[in-house]
Length: 240
Image (cartoon, rainbow, N blue to C red; front, side, top):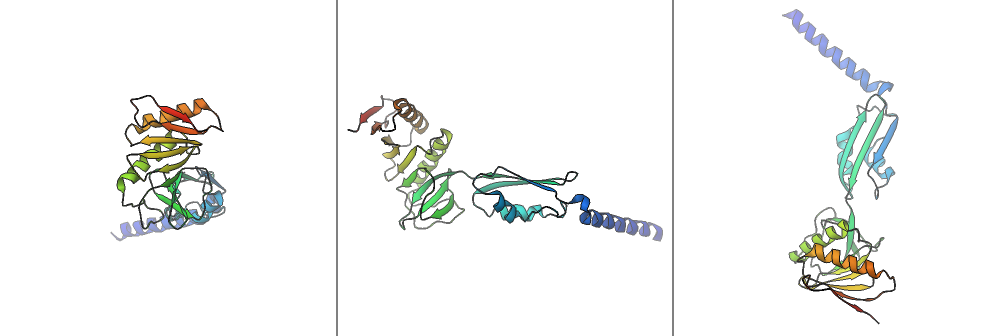
């Protein structure tokens, strides 16, 4: 019995010794850090938040803690951390939330949102050519959370539209979306004012408007496009 206990104890000590050796051995130092999937978030921001540096032991690196810290950045939606023990390579792959537009706030600032209406940031200016949204009714918001509004239908329509703008890659072409009246949505598409109507047949309406505006293909073109009733021919009037 004592002999068996001694063998077990010896085995535990041996395992602890091996783990200590591995954890302190230079054989398992991180020699290279690879970062993928980042666009808006800089590589340096990712390194700083994760705490990863070359030279530390790849096994003792706290991947769970690094992932938790990285997800504090509201632009980061998903994090995968992988270890290549034999080559000493630590790989961090992130998936970012995509900025889809700005909401005008009564304070004069702009609320940055993704395609699901999640608040990513708030600033006194906007940095990119993307839709500016007006007509939503809200009193407060929290960065990192879905925007809560009093007129929920308008918010639901916004989510549908921003996802379609993303789908058809026209975020930079649509300058303004007015959801003050959800039965008569107004969209400023370049220099063309689009009478969109309600949200019904939204996908087909977006495709139709895109085809017409691209076919006209004139940066100086100004006019009005009526696609409120998709069952009737679209009406375009030049602004003179």
